[in-house]
Image 1 (tube, rainbow, N blue to C red):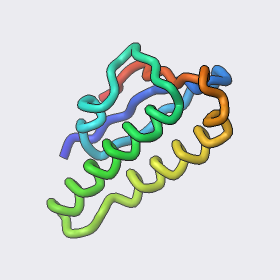
Image 2: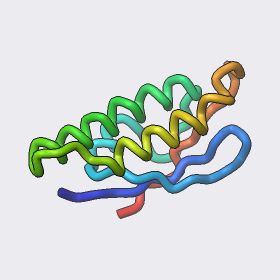
Image 3: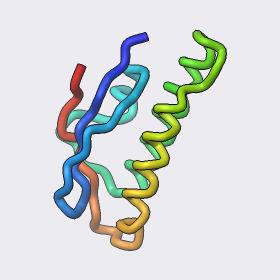
Image 4: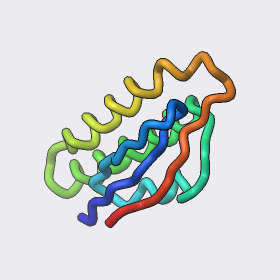
Amino acid sequence: MPEMHFVVTWPDGRRETCYSPSLVVKEFLDEGESYPVSDFLERSRKALTIASERVEAKYGYPCSLARGQLARIVATGAPFLADTEARVRCETFLP
């Protein structure tokens, strides 16, 4: 199963490299695009849930790394949810 990393920039300017065990993230995020925080969290939740389910279908157990990454994304994004102008930018996809 091809895994990938994607780099995002949070509203405070912090960059983070995130992990997915599947390329499905490319169906939910576009390189160079920015998203309102709530939208980014929902897109990440959908993508990483599908990625974890794909791992489970193949290996018989969900992907703990995808679940952990989603938890970090949600925790990092939570403080920005009150700011309707805050956006998260998907900088690039890495192999």
